[in-house]
Amino acid sequence: MPSFAAQQCLFRAYDIRGSRQHFTTDFIQALGKAFAQLYSVANCNPTTTPAKASLPKPSIDLKRTIIVLGYDVRLGSDIIAQRLANILTEYGLQVIHLGLITTPMMVFWAEQYSGHGIIVTASHSAKDILGIKWLVNHQSPSHAEIQLLWQKTRASYACHLNHSQAQVDSQNTLTNTIAKSICNQPFNLSDTQVATTYIEAIAQVFKQIHPCNKPLLKDKQQPSGTLDVVVVIDCMHGATSNIAQRLFEHFCQQVIMLNDTADGSFPSGNPDPTEPHRLKQLQRSVRQHQADIGIAFDGDGDRLMIVDNSGKVVTPDHLLYLLAQVALTEHPETLCYKSPVHSQLPSQILFDIKCSHHLPKLLSELGATPVLSKTGSSFMRRQMQQSAGQIVFAGELSGHFIFNDSRFIIYDDAMYAALRLLHWLAAYDAYGKKSLTDITEQLPAMVSTADHYLPMPKTLKKDDAIVEQLTKFCQYLRQLVEATVAKDSGDHWIATSQPSLCRCSMSRQYMTSKQAKCLLPVGTKLSCIDGVRLDFDHGFGVLRQSNTSHNLTARFAGDSIEDLRDIQAKFAALCRPFDKKLAEQIVAIPAE
Image 1 (cartoon, rainbow, N blue to C red):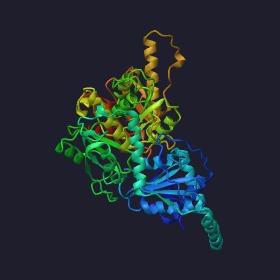
Image 2: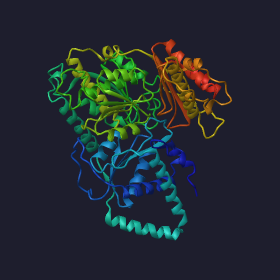
Image 3: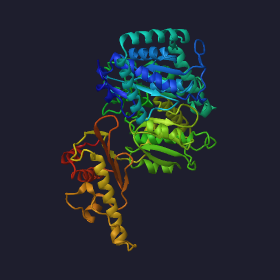
Image 4: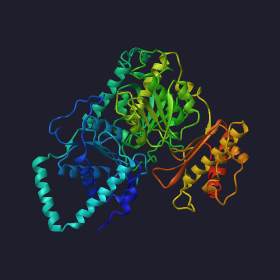
């Protein structure tokens, strides 16, 4: 019998995800029991959501703990979802089966009930990867909670092994008898009801934001509320294939679809719009149809990428800025202002550590407070939910964007974010502005690398990873620079306050103050909340450990190609004392 040792690697920072070979029948059975235990003891405290749906009530016992459940297009996801539904039902839980949906749609439906939900999905990963995401009491699990679920899964299977077959058969008979007497089968919602309720909830949002639709219309013959835009959408054969056309045709005059057949073999490539050159087909189609915008979604509909009307990919940094402007402009407290930019709202915008050095300044110019965050949309959602509404928007370089204005779910729904952008652009155009290309061309230009994965180097000290060593080294250098500046300026400076040689650089060449200033010039900002990020006058760089793989991730940007190369050279020099190969790899990362 398996011990599930191989399955431990599936329990990652944000979800359960990995090779399909690990999703065995025994493992799903044990995992289903662990989920049943988790939801059985969860403190249900349902909240009312702004998107008030017309909820199905026949055959649903609202007094019992309700879990909504769905799956993505991957081969085998539907089978796993059905097995989990059966197990949860056997344990007395009420399951509402949503069928093939996006992850944000699962969240939307969970919000209509107790805030509990499961979706079998591996998001943007390759076709041979399976996965599971879930909510408990409206929140995604933390890393610690994911590891606790692993322990429960292993314990569930161990308990099963400790019983004799007779005991197991007897227990199963009793469980089934009880289940049949107190439980219905999982309640299946129709595809039409799942989609219609979701679309109607989004339509209500835009009725709130734009109660008068006339400014959005160029053609008075169009149906009320229809935007006079040509939109090209690439579903990448993912879960948005089932709903994107219907949703966007509700709001847009002309919608052109690409790769909108749900297909778990992903014939056009991985369902990840952030991969280099992945949007070539979308770019060509936008130019061919002279469309106003191109939109791409990932496999489970929580990542968004945009192509402008000239066929150019809008950088995630610029897209984050535009959507932050949407959030600020259309916040309930600022709708009384007619200007597309309101500079006095004391709101916070959350952005992850991989975003460019221009972004904080741009956000400040909007009147918002820019807040740097660890990478991970689940981290951001938790911060937003705990901010009492102070954080009105959050975004990641990887294409996750979250609105927090009490109108819709606090989740990275790519389709919803795209519609918010479309409506804002239409209103923006009504103020005499121009196309998306015209808008983005006014934003600061830069040269950057992609978010690049590098193999994790082996370190001499097993308990001190390369990123931790680099962190200590940079902190030491900054301390050395600050102490030298203070001494040179004549400030009171005590000799004993001079930083000693840090342990990370022991037995290595001593770093002089001049060398320290060269690597970390005066004014360089250091952030260590998630790896090492350095902001220079003309660019930035970040090196951090991936949350989803045994790799380092790196990104560098500069105002020019010379600035970019200089920053890469600085990071290479910082890493060289610890790993020469890593230093070479950093220098070799190409510009986008």
